Image (tube, rainbow, N blue to C red; front, side):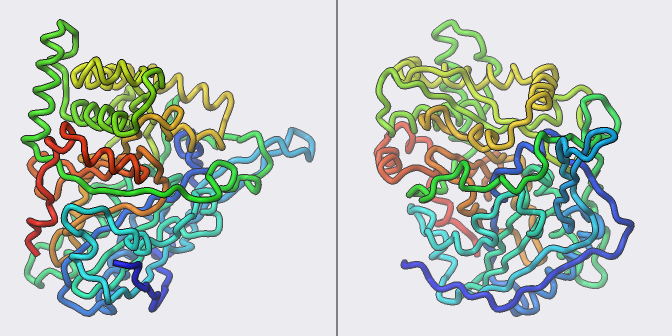
Length: 475
C-alpha cells in the first residue's frame, strides 16, 4: 500500500520525581557511539482495552514511575571543557549524562487507515511506511545535548497500536535498553491488573556506575577537542540514504538445530577443529554470510567478513554486575576471506570462523581495545566500524536473548517487533527472539533491492527459513 498519512495528535513531556542532580561520565564504549544513530525499535500490539488517549495516559503514568528508577534516561548529554593547568587554553572536553530530570517525550500519532495486516504482510517486505512509526528519524547520539534521550511514539492503527521508541545509544546498549523497557512494561502491567492481583515489580535494579579498566568508578575521559559542534551526521553518512528492501524472516529452533548439525558434520568430515563447539548463532551467521555473499555475486577475489556485535559483560574479568546500565558491546569480525573461498569451503568452515572470532574476544582483548581507543579516541571512525569490510560482508546486531516479547504493557504480548530506518545499510542483519519462543529466532535482513531479489532465489537460504509467522499470529 502507498505510504499512509501519520499525524501527530499530541506531544507531552514525562519527567521523573525530583532528585539530587547527578552527572554520569560516559565510558569508552559510550563515547564511541556519539556519531551513531539513535536506536529505533518498535512493537506491534492488538487493540488495547481502552481508547488510545487513555492508553497514552496509562503509558505516561507508568513511564514516570519507571523513570524514578531509570532516572538517567530522562537526562541530557552534557559537554564540559577541560583547560590546561594555570591557563585558559582548552585542551579537550568530556561528555556525561546530566541527570537533572529534563524529561522524555511521548507522542500520540494516528494512522487509522493502516491495519495490523498491512504492517506484517505475509511473505513480503517490511512496508516502507513502518518507518513513519518511529520518532526522531535521522537523529544521532551527540544531539542528545538538546534532544530527549528517549522518545516514544504511540501510533493508533485501524485495529491495533504500534509503540515505537527512539533511544540514545550513547546512554546504553540494547541489553540495558530492553531491561528498561521491560521494567516500564511491568509497571504498566501491574497498573492494569485487578486490584487483588499481586502487585510487586520484579525487574532487577539498574547499576549506573560506569565500568573503569582500573576498577572503581569511571573518571571522565577527555576527548582531544574543545566541543562536539563539528560532529555532524553528514561527515559519515551519504547525502542520499541507500535504497533498501527489508525482510523479517523466522528460523525455528528445529531449523537452527539442523543448521548447527550440518556445520558440525562438515567440520567432522573435513577433520577440522571446532565441531563440538558449534553453536546455533555460528550456524545462522554462516548461512547469512555465505548466502548474502552469493546474492551479491561478488568477484572471486573480493574479500568479505562477517561482523557482529558481541556483549563484553560476561567476558570481562571480573564480569560486569547484573543490571549494568551502559554500553558494553564491541563489533568484532571473522578473518577476511575471498568470496570464492568462502563459498567453496562451505557452511561448516564459515561457522567455525565465527566461532574463532568469538573465542578470541577475551578479557585481555577487550582491555587492549579500551587502551588503544583511550590513547587515540576516534569518534568519526566509530560508525564505519559497524559496516562491512568494503561493503561486501554482513553485520549482525541485536540478540535473541533480549526479552522483546516480555514487553506486555497490560493487554498481551506484542504481535511483532520491528526496527526503524536508523543505521540501516546493505548487509545489516538484526536478530530478535522468535515470537513463538522455544529457541526460535526472527531475523531482519536489509539489502539493496537487487541483492534481496537474488537472495529470494537462493534455495539453500530459503530451505532454512520457517513459514511466515504472520500467518500464524493469534490475535
